[in-house]
Image 1 (spheres, rainbow, N blue to C red):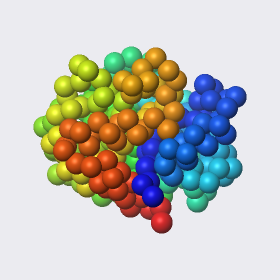
Image 2: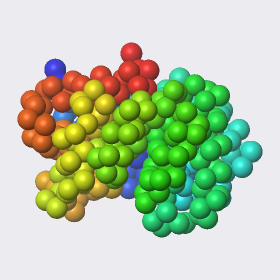
Image 3: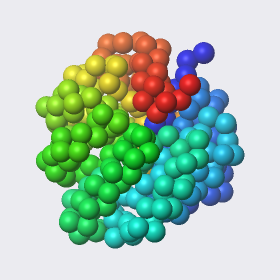
Length: 257
C-alpha cells in the first residue's frame, strides 16, 4: 500500500476542535499513514503531544513560532524540554524567523530561535524551520550553528532554487506544500524540479494553504495527495515513487521506525 507522510500539520488548531477524529480517519482512508502535528506556542505544543498520545500514526513537534517569540523565556524552555521527553515528540518546531508580519521584534525572534536551536542540540532532535522574508538571516544561522548536523527541514519552502540547493548541500531537507499546486506558482515549481527526491518532504500546513483543487476549503492531511501528485507531475515520476521517497525521507529524518 502506498504510504504518505504529512510532515507538517496543525491539528492542534482550533479549526479542528470539533472533528479531529474524522479528519484523521479521512487521512488514513487516503493512505496518509503518518502525520506530524506541529506546535507553534506552549498551548499548541501541549495539544500536539496530547493528540499524538491518542491517535496512531500521529506524532508531535514542540516549539514557539517567531510570532510568539516574546513568550520564550526560561520557564517556557523548561516546559518545552519536558514536553519533548515524550517518545512521540520527534522534533523541535516550528521555530524560525518571520520578517513579513513582524509580530515580535526581529531581535527577540533571533534570540528565541537560537535558544531553541540550542535546545534541539541538547535533546538531539531535528528542527522544523519557519522562514518568511528572512532568508539571509536563516541561512546565516544554519551555517553559524551547524544545526544541520542534528537535522533541519525548511517547511513550506518559499526561497529560491539557489537557496534550496545551498540548504541541501549543508544537509537540510526541503518541504513543499499547497503553493506548489497554484497556477501562478513559479519558485515552488522550480524548487520541486531542481531538488532531488531524497531531499524532499511533502506537507499540508493545514488548516492553511489548501492545494488548488480544494482552494477555499479548510486544508487537512488527506489533501497532501494533491501536493504529491503535483510534484510527481513536475518531476516526471510516478506518484508511487514520490510517495515512497518523501515518506522514507521523513521517517528517517524524524527517527520513526
